[in-house]
Length: 493
Ligand SMILES: [Zn+2]
Picture (tube, protein in one colour):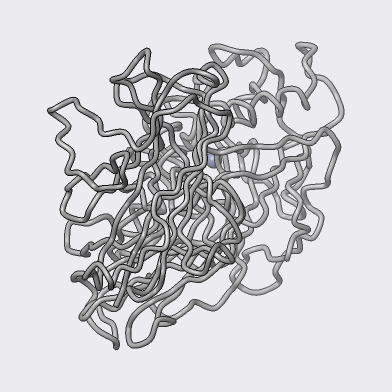
């Protein structure tokens, strides 16, 4: 994160498609973008081009080209909205127009740019309203497109034709690039050239630019985050917020983690470090910032505690750019994620030993108070239960089969529970899978992974264990169906 929170302000950018020329470079984005990688667009311009295609249909197809080929989504609305509504011309010496807009993205043919003259040879103008964001460059809050009513337009593919007039559809395609936050660039085959040419569909360079702008956290290397504890460190060479956001001017280091929730869950994420000034950022799967925290866990440590609906999320382990008054802006950290819930959690991701696919689902959780509430963080002196549940693939129900329980330790050791409840070290090379239970498989199998276990009584004061549950059928004894996201148990003194 960049530093003190910026004051929110609105700016208005104007982007023009004309016939002049500029320098050469690859796709050009400032990082200014729509939160959530989507917006609506009113396309109800009345009338029909000489070719017989309606203006509205050309707008719809142009919007669809961006939606189909990039991470951005236009939701087109067939009714009309005045693009100049809420727009006002600034009387200040700067000459820049001003206004708050109306929050609606309109399109129309106009004889002026909402009161200002179109420049010479200007075919269309996109008016972009922005405001400051918590992270990265500004958010776009509204973008309206006006087409010069004094130009002669038609709608056609292929080479530009003097006699037919300008192809309206490729002009719209270009302007919609400005709507999503693309700037001009001059590579020969780009729709985002400042001057109109023979390209009439999105080009690779346009798609690469929009993808960098809207890929969000996927612009950086990312790893799966499951409940439990892990160590990391921020150091030069790591991804930066600038890279992650596809622009902006925030060079602070960031490690990226993603996780999925199968149901509404209260999660607690702590990022602690003896030296680093940690900052946590929680994002949706579409890289919309949900929350940023700097010091909630005391000292220079950060914490986010939040009830989240089912869905995909990203966590950014971040710090400040340059200097911080509360520790270093690089160094090691520990990330701990825990949950509190009223029942078992769905365990996303299916896996198998031999690559087979079962239509099974898995859930599980840890409780330290007889199932009244669930959390993976427990004290060593508490009595712990770990419960799992398997919804068996319908084709396997009623068949002779077996249940397997595995415990994965911090140091990489794998332990399997045998039929008398002992944990046996497992060697994947041996091929021999100790079975927790052999039985006729029911539709739902409840698995008591641990019952009334007090870690301190076993001499354990601190441990992190990931449990997996799985099942197989006797007719295919080497195959095992299980889940990717483990049931985490984190024991602290
Ligand atoms: Zn332009």
